[in-house]
Every structure is written in structure tokens, then in C-alpha cells.
Amino acid sequence: MASASSDLPAVFSALRQILATHSGGLLVQRDDDDQLYVDTHHLQPNKKPLFFGAVQRKKGTVAFHLMPVYQRPELLGAISPALKARMQGQSCFHFKTLEPALFTELDRLVQAGRASYQAQGFVD
Image (cartoon, rainbow, N blue to C red):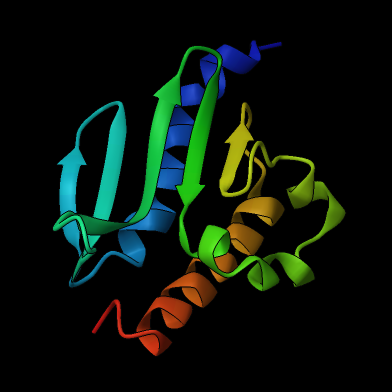
């Protein structure tokens, strides 16, 4: 049986694809073998772009950050207990293995997050 750490490249690839799918028109700040980091074009009062999301390979896990759920926690109201169990903090999900059903749910959450940012005028 393969170890969970051997799944990390596939997990990163799958989660990277989710974020990349919803990143059209956004600012990709970093995209490499360890991270996809995406900002909006909206400048905050500190003149820095508003963070949208990131996927990061860590030691033993892949982290998926989604800032819209931090700003609008009500977006999390409809997520499953299984996806909620993957949360660490207010806007980060951690995965060690491929979980297609949770990835599909996360994809819908990213879509809802982008729509929320659009409604607030942060994304075109």
C-alpha cells in the first residue's frame, strides 16, 4: 500500500487544477511545483492586492487557502462535515490523499467564493 506522502503530488495537482480553473482574470503571483498563489486586481487600503487563494505543498500535506470564506463565513454553511473536518483555521483546508467527492465540493466552494468576490466588486 502506498503511503499518504506518496499521494501528495497527485493531491497537489488535483487541488491546483481546482484553483486554476477559477483563476481566469486574476493575478497569478506564483505557479510552480510547490505552490499556486492567486490575488485579485483589487487593491486594499495598504495598496496590496486582495488575496484570493493558494494551493501549497507542505511536508506531509497539501494546504488549500480560500480567502472569500474568511470574509464571508456564511459560504461555509452548506459544506459537508467531511470537508469541514479538513479545515484548519478559518479559510484553509488540508489534504493528504485524493478525495474526489471532497474535491468536487471544494470546487463548488471556490466557485461560490469567486461569485462572492464579484458581488463585492473585488473581481470582474
